[in-house]
Length: 254
Image (cartoon, rainbow, N blue to C red; front, side, top):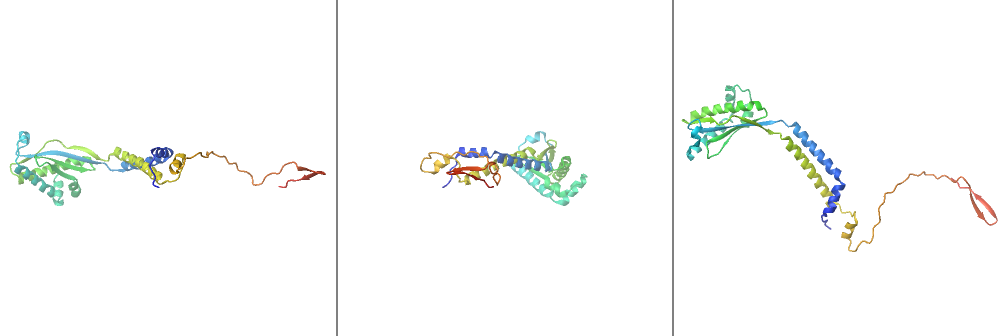
């Protein structure tokens, strides 16, 4: 017969097995803390740039045709492909005295923006916070050279200073994730145990199974067992049995 979930019985089992919940939760929380402690920090830096006819100012509020915006987006898409070329990135880093891996820099760079405005975001992620701004400025300088060469009459302008912030590890999130996984996992484990256990433990469970009422139950008491010697000592005095005609002595043999 399929077992039906009884909330009171399940809560009683949780209360009885509270140590399982605490033990599993402590283990997973500890693993989450240890994982967060070993993670290498990473940082993200970004700067907003404006691509237009002048160096910003009132020109930012002008209306731009869809053709202009498409031209800008196409140019930046080409530039994103160019900075992914190892030889191009190596020469850029060398000109700015940055002794870094071209592949690592290209992998961390990103240029994003909207197709409705000429404002774009240049970002770079790295485990070394100190190199983020120099790399972004090197890419910006190279981007300015390419704008002057490929889009005559247009300029690129920095709208804000480079802002850097940590993106990982989020230690609190790791620890809370470990705690949540342990707590919910232990509850699920006990639920499976409860669902698969078909033994009858209480009078109420028996009444649900039997079609007749239960008249009584045998109480269960704790019993204290005392270890006894294998051999029993005999009585100090001889046993005496009175029979007709006299008294006969018997000795208890060990």
